[in-house]
Image (cartoon, rainbow, N blue to C red):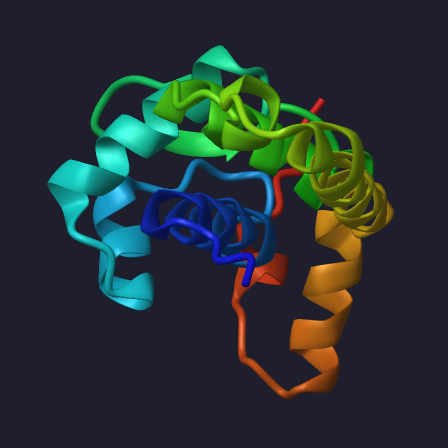
Length: 151
């Protein structure tokens, strides 16, 4: 079965937390850690990689934290999955492992197709979609109070 890594789940939860609770203001890692139950030390590594990947932007200082690098409707789950895969640096066993002719010509191609279909589906799910689901589910947020309309 396909199982997401802890790091992948933490990354998705952290980015969604920033999208849903942040408004236009930076969200500190401690707030994310507390809401999501992710160890802060572990979370910081993931957040820094997401900054380097262009999904998040970091702001320094006492009121600093993390914001989305783009609008939440322009960030999808597939992008987060690819960024975490790169961070984990683990080779794809379907691509690298040797095997019999049946494995190489029959089983592995099916597995690659499934991976591509799954990534295609994840590419179609944006942070905006997930935030709307959270609103429908009645999950409270004060993000509207954190918007900054100054020019």
